[in-house]
Image 1 (tube, helix red, strand yellow):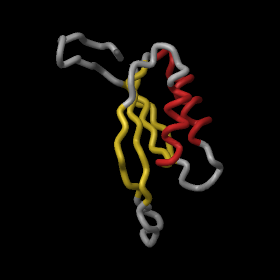
Image 2 (image 1 turned 90 degrees about the vertical axis):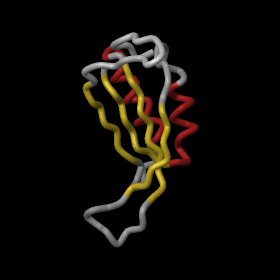
Image 3 (image 1 turned 135 degrees about the horizontal axis):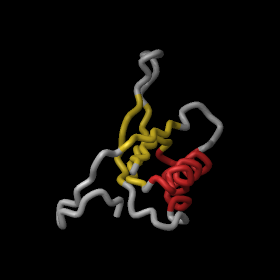
Length: 102
């Protein structure tokens, strides 16, 4: 299992979520409001962004990344970044079920 984490432009969120809804077996996404700061250019103002966090079975990671990249792309600086992170274990709090993305 992997966590796909993407920081994208706020106004692209509806388009990205619509694209993700087309992927079978994708259970849910967590969305957080975040701010991006430039370390290289500290004079730049922070930018409002959103962060998607999605637990994804290994077999659909590539599709999830491709959908986010396609639907979040504007071609302008600040489109964002996608991270794919290995997940060692998950535990569903309500049931105790382990190692599922659902």
